[in-house]
Image (cartoon, rainbow, N blue to C red; front, top):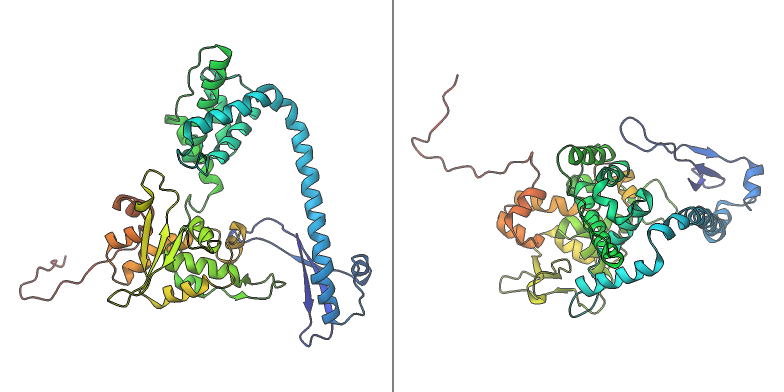
Length: 399
């Protein structure tokens, strides 16, 4: 749900609209009908129907939106507390606090970085997901291998991707091994997904991703067709800061996490814009935090600033820019696009500009050409060089 204050064309009067989410139409577009509030309802929200549009807008921005935000937060907190209370009894039985704390320290001792002493960024997320699974399936660790179908069914129910569930399963087995070792019981790990269960998990995941499991690649033609605004109260257009974020991902081929770190990197610890080289080309150098298997000096990638779109993207990095929510991208770009849409479109864009595939793979920061070809090359687009016309060039015979 949302709200919108809308003036008439001459801005001499105004109306307050209540927007309600009502699912999606057959094309996947969200249905968000708006209801115009009557004067009596407007007064109940603190507005005066006799106010000018400027006075109403001031109240809307300074008071009304803050009150609605507090109301939404209070509702979320109430729901969260109810869920916590319901889950507390189950969690205490299958995830005792003392064992959970000891196990987390075990993870740190076994997997933390030797220099920083910190776990990889995604390990906390994996462990939270694992705890949710353990609390719901309600199996003791020494029974995991006897009833693996209960664990696989959890992945089907929650529509996990096979790759995500593989990571969760690793933590399930780590927890099971640790608890059984403490309780002096034998432990057999849950087998990996195979055969019918792997197909069921994959099918359930694709149901929630009916338009494809991965984001479609973004293009400049699509992006430039999307109207955006700097007016924060306008919900009909994409916010300018969100539009610029997607533009930077496309023009520079950045991972969303890389761009997020660049935007907060005031001391140039994870990025650098070099001076022009002998050909007058500057480079954006980016530290790839996720490549933990490489030495720090080998985790930097260099992206040459070759085109006008990239020059503009570098300027955007110094302006108002923020990552959009996935639902924002779905609303204004399309349901087949996500935060990786810009990076997905980077390879085909540079190929169309005549850049070599192996060079673009390095700009993306991939450690192998296979990764670029498998995950970033759009399958339906084919590039080729027209051979020079020479006497006797082979031609297909007509049927």
